[in-house]
Image (cartoon, rainbow, N blue to C red; front, side, top):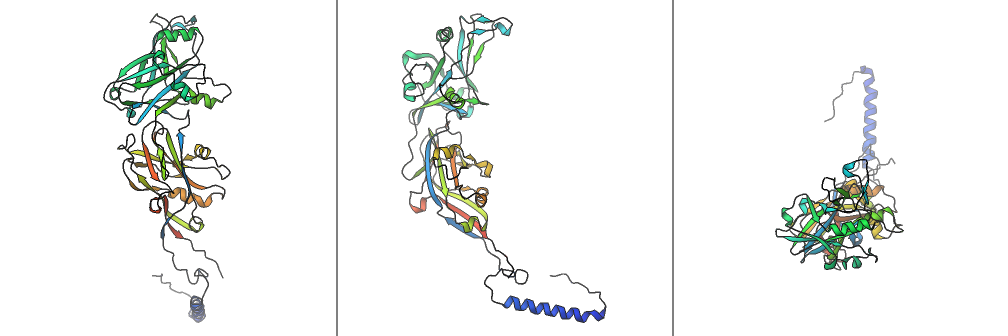
Length: 431
């Protein structure tokens, strides 16, 4: 109720004030009974009727696709060493192209040549959450150095053969701690050092079913190391070598990529004609581009925005274990048309306020991904920046798990859609 105001003017001025009030009331009544083109034409005299919230589901996806080969070599913090014949089989390749030929005994002032070595082993730091297997398996180490084109996967795979096996270790994956040491031939190591050569090792798992997730890179450097005694005198401090490689006519990024990497011998099935795939092995990412009506993005206040994805049940890998679905926000303009380039340059969804979603691969149904913060930015983007989102899986390339969703080629009720709740804006202008 309006506050009551007591007039304290002299009585002789009450007449003119009352007359003025009656005139204003008459003008207000006339204005609010006048037929106007828009309800907001005179907000000070007859406020427009309040708009109500509108909820809509939009078939706004104009392009969707899945692309494999992630993560890019050299960008994966982990590598998977696995022998799961019904799911995934992988091996690891590690390059040590810079071998020492001298050492300082016990870090003293003198320098001696390395003429003999002892206690040679390959050390892996492990992610304990990636261990699988309760029965013994054998980890085998191979000499995979060659003068052939060893950046070609088929060439490197051919070197995993009995005459090149130089070390092995029997382990039970579930019983391991946070590191692993695999001994290998000191004769091979000594010969490589004497020849001022390079050491390139391949590691695979055999003799049972299991997997290990090893740390590949820490702070931009390879995490696995080769450790050895530079003399048969065990009182000397061991030497440690980190991965490094030389790739002619290449960049530092390429050399880092080939210092520690994986080979996949048995991979997950590709997506079908009406499927978007996220994860798998090697991992896929999926991309969706939207065309949202401007009356929603530009002329409304969005209060809820969700990407609706219809999940398909998957039986691949760790299908019963929850995995994270992580959003990526493409940042390139429409000039960039190469999907791989678009996904490589995409920013993490967390920068746009899009949180990860935990899903179980073996389940099915409609899943809603909250993209409210992202949708609110679409109004401010330049017209040549597509409104889009992409998805990747947690521990990409380091776990055998996948999420499958129906694509825009599926029946209408199964396609990706946008659900938006918004409040249309009223534009107030004076007549």
